[in-house]
Image 1 (cartoon, rainbow, N blue to C red):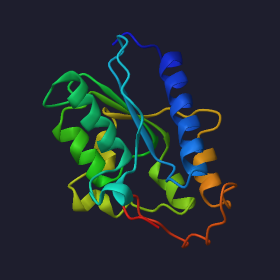
Image 2 (cartoon, rainbow, N blue to C red):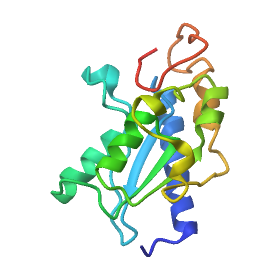
Image 3 (cartoon, rainbow, N blue to C red):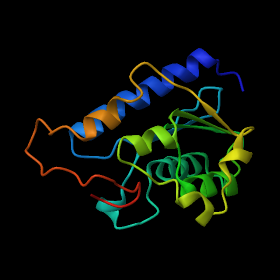
Image 4 (cartoon, rainbow, N blue to C red):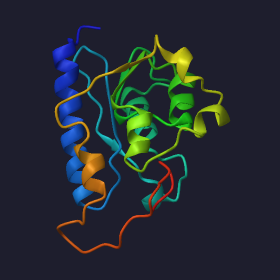
Amino acid sequence: MNRTTAGLAGLMAEAVEFGVRHVASGGLPFVGVLTDGDGYVSDFGVNEVRRTGDATAHAEIVAMRRAMHDRRARDVRGLRLLATGEPCGLCYRFAIDHRIARIHVAVDADTAAAHGFDYRHSYPAFGVDRARLAGLVSPLPVARGLEPFERFHRPHHSAPTPPAPPEHTKGTPS
């Protein structure tokens, strides 16, 4: 993998900025993007559960599915997943089962929980032990990493919206 840490941080910053815009348009703050380190970068994936009715259409899975389609591959072997928020159990399971090489997160699950997105209960349900992911997952904080999560709870500028419930799950529309 030739992509440098600075290059990964730049791509994560782009994903975070995309997340800020997505939240402003009414979406959730989770964004996923894949790269191979040699120039391939997938489209940004966002949560499409509400739009599609597909309960598995979380941001990271959407990005991985697009990468598999782009590359005409059955898995994401050798690719890195960058996620604005740490993946939930379903997304980790999908990434592991589809042979992702590495996962970088801007905001960990504990921080996401503190901002109203507590999906930590999903890990045991999908057989994911976060303590055993040390070789696969690493933090990649960026300057504005929390901004999509902080902005999610602010009223949207484009149209008034009712206040969000105090806690959200990653795949459940609010």
